[in-house]
Image 1 (cartoon, rainbow, N blue to C red):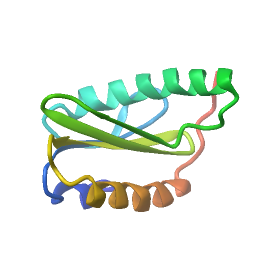
Image 2 (image 1 turned 90 degrees about the horizontal axis):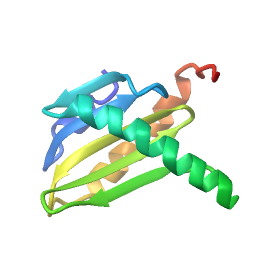
Image 3 (image 1 turned 90 degrees about the vertical axis):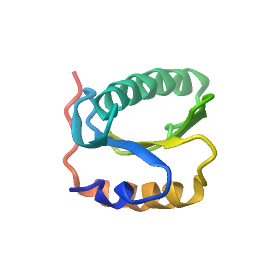
Length: 113
């Protein structure tokens, strides 16, 4: 599976590879389906905001809550992200996500309505 490289990283509790329609193509962990749907929604909102600002494509999403940290990267039509326990070192996950984003370039482009 594409996201297997994320499973054994310290602090990762869930990860997902998401198609543009929000369906997980690959997922791992508790809450991965929710992560997939919300990453697709976040990307759509951020893409719209970015377009309106003339800022270019969104390539990375990251946020921190009281309990978790979420980091995601985009590649073409796809997004891959991970949920980590708060306080985890995000460097290793960011590097793994960047490598995955390169691999995702081989996935087919989705037709947009």
